[in-house]
Length: 114
Image 1 (cartoon, rainbow, N blue to C red):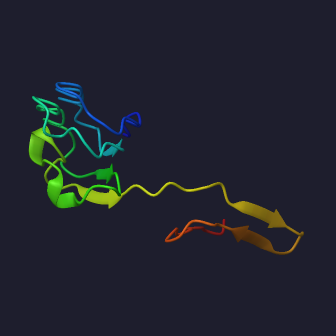
Image 2: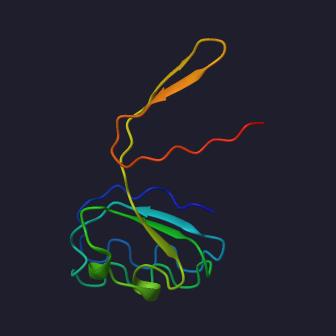
């Protein structure tokens, strides 16, 4: 289960405290914050008792070593990835070939044939 995206880039005291506590099925958090982690109780127990495995998408502007971990930060055992803002790709199809032009450095495109 994915949490609503958290678009704030600067956190304030107690802003995310206990937010997802007890959400046992929660396994994806997108948090774009890159500052304010040092404020009082900013993320106190916000991920206490969430799923044991999941994905935390963080701001690419802040090194992983500067993020708190555990119930008051990035949950233990979760995969962490950088947030990459993607721009809508240009897609064309001529009846035979699909062409995708994605102008975002480092972007990966996954696909499957049905």
